[in-house]
Image 1 (cartoon, rainbow, N blue to C red):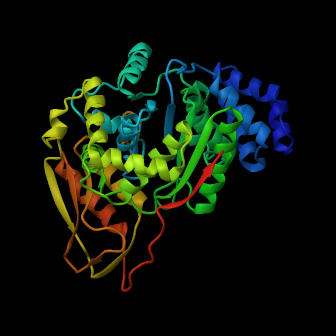
Image 2: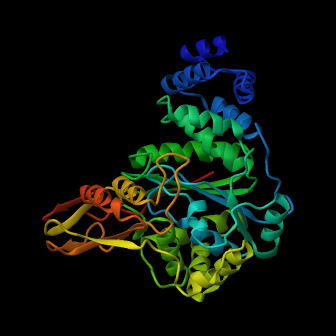
Image 3: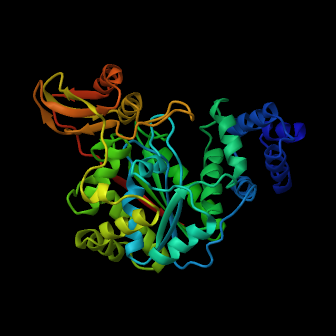
Length: 430
């Protein structure tokens, strides 16, 4: 391992065998953390070639179980690089399934200022996020969609390596990010993968160019494994939609699926589904977009969501009767000055929701499913001093003061209306 670290520190290209030695040895506990962190730091400074990144992804992918979806047809998956108010999976998964695609999806939990799809689904009473492999596959065969938590032995090398990178300032390395995301997506088995790569204040990548570089690398790696991959580069400089928090985001997703809301969240979701469908079925993006829009407008996507949630034990009466729980204590946040809202710092809004109880600061924290922030105004809106701009919800009134202070610091005002920024910066295909 010493020789491998030294070689990478010098900027030389590692062989496939050397990378396999590192991944296998670290996964088994034979290589200590201090050598693994030195390796990651060397990669941060020296980078990796395309062949090295491919090898790292491959060996991390095969470090544990892989899911066999060969019994299913038209398998699709989507992955977002993380954001605030990003509930696209709740909308895209049933919409794609309603069009005849097989959505066998494993999702994660939230940590820090970004929420997790599994936490959002668990805000629906009774919803089971753990299924056996047989139950998982049978459900997708029957109704086209199942969404569960990630299995314990899916890409264990990534799980172990990410925890190390998180505490050694080695997260922001392109090849390490690419191999982390793609090893899990490839192990999950779908033939067609759509990536939603975010940029802005609420995302890991802060600029469109950085997001484009990450998207390009992930598409290349996925294509090298014989998968069809497409990446949307999208704006996360403000929260996506109007709600941030688990139950609140489910409520908003349901409104979109019912055709009651047609804003940026709807626009992004139908474009994601369009990419999923066009990859799997060979249609044009425009043809698939029309199908996705029709599925939502006709109610097919909403009916598919109810069927999916019910199949996994969720009590759909809470969805049908609009009775999903929200926090007992509410506070209205008002504009501190007049003018246009020129910017909403998405990360700070996410942190505000976490302070209310909607997120985790550490992995062992309990979630308050009804906690969160509901925006009444968004970037570009004109307000007067004292206008209502948001409502915060929590099950603990002692959280409201700190959360409001954080939220207020996220809002910037100006005398002129800000320029509209595109929601979708571009789409890359493999």
